[in-house]
Length: 386
Ligand SMILES: Cc1cc2nc3c(=O)[nH]c(=O)nc-3n(C[C@H](O)[C@H](O)[C@H](O)COP(=O)(O)OP(=O)(O)OC[C@H]3O[C@@H](n4cnc5c(N)ncnc54)[C@H](O)[C@@H]3O)c2cc1C
Image (tube, rainbow, N blue to C red; front, top):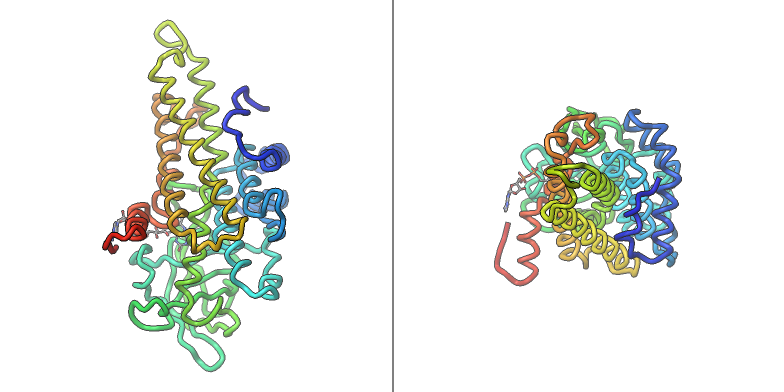
C-alpha cells in the first residue's frame, strides 16, 4: 500500500527510485512472513532478496554503492525491522565494500560468498575500556614464525554472538605510532577464539551484540588484511565507508515515521479542528520532511562519489559530516514524531509508539559525533586534538 505522500522527497534518478520501489515491493510479503522471528531468520530472508549482493564495480546505472543504498532503503520502506536494516547496512557498507576495495581480487573472490547471507561478518574494534581511541587498544597479535598469536578481547561488537567471520584490529607494534596496528580476518571458530558476554541493548534491540575473547588464538599470516602495520589505514577505510552511507539504513524508518505522523496529524480532531490545521503541528511535520530530505540528498551524494571511484579515505571529512548530519536529523525527526504522538509515543501497541534509543545510538556508533566534530575542525586547520 502506498500513501498519497509517497511520491514526495523522491528526487533521485529514475533508475535509483525504481530499485527502491522494487525492493520495497519484493520485501513487503517477506517482512510479514518473518515478523517476530529471530535475528538470523530475518537477516537471511532479506539476504535472499539480494540485499547483500554488490553490483559489479563498473556498473553505472546506478553504480554499485547507490544500488546497495537503494535496496536497503527499499526494505526499510517495506517495514523491515530497523535493527535488521542496520545490520545489513553495517555489513554491506562497513565491511563488504571496503574489503572488496582493499583485498587482492582472488582474496575477495574467496570471500564473495558472504553476499548470500549465510556467512555473517563482524567488525571488532572496540574494547571494554573504550572505543574512540583505537591506539589505546590492548588486544595484541604477536608474530610467531609464519603465524600470529592473538590475545585480548573486543566488546560491544554488533553481531559477535552470531558472526562466522571477524575483522579484528590488534596491536602489532608499540605506542601510538600510526603503524602500531594490524587488521585480521578469520573465522570465529578458530581455536583460541570464544564468544564472551552478550549484551542486551535498548537501541536496535533485535541485533545481537557481544564480546569476542582471544586466548592465544593462532592465525595464519594469510589472515592479515593488507600488510602488518596497516591496521589504521584499513580502519580509516572501513570507518569512512561506514560514516558515508551506513545511515542509509534509517531512510526507510524515517519515511515511515513521517508518513505515520502525517496520517495522525491529518486525521485527528483536536480543539474542534484537525490537529494538522495547527501551524505549529504543520511546522513540525515540515521539519520532519526537511530532516528526511537533507539526509536522503546527502547519503545518495556520498554514494555517487564512491561510485565515481573517489577513495573512501579521501572522503573522510565529508563522510563524518554526513554521519553527524543524518544521525542528528534522525534524532530530530524522531523527537517531532514523539511530541506529536503525545502519550501514545510511550505506549507499546498504540500504533504511535516511539523508539528514541535507536536514533540516539547513531550519535555514538561509527565514531561519536563529538569526536567527529573535532576531526572535521582539524581538517580545517584548527590545532585541535582529541
Ligand atoms: C548500536 C551500536 C553498535 C556498535 N557496534 C560496534 C561494532 O560492531 N564494532 C565495534 O568495534 N564497536 C561497536 N560499537 C561501539 C562503538 O564503536 C563505540 O561505542 C564508540 O567507538 C565510542 O566508544 P565508547 O562507547 O567507548 O565511548 P567513549 O570513547 O568512552 O566516548 C564517550 C563519549 O565521551 C565523549 N568524549 C570522550 N572523549 C572525548 C574527546 N577527547 N573529545 C570529545 N568528546 C569526548 C564523547 O561525547 C563520546 O561520545 C557499537 C556501538 C553501538 C551503540
